[in-house]
Length: 126
Image (cartoon, rainbow, N blue to C red; front, top):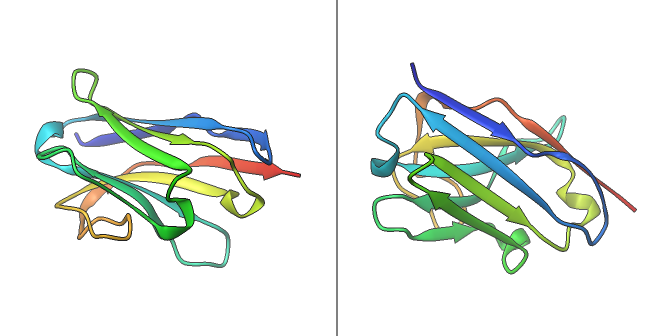
């Protein structure tokens, strides 16, 4: 069974940091790309950061470049999203997903059906 378990969300002040984790199981982790997405109620889900485990390449949404960093620990089948210098507008539910390749804007080229994790809430307060 494919599982992607996101964790690490919470309440943080503007300018603070959080690290999200996405623990994956049930598929060949090192052959896929993993993406982080976020969604605010009433808005579309948007790609934030993407990492290709096949070649280690990463892409980011313009809104998070220079502040967020995605990384992978293949031994633990886990992808991390380090979020620094958090802003109010980073408040959202964050999800991880598995797919085939990364687009240049931090989203996956395609999310494989069934390869979404549950969300973890990040709230940035001023």
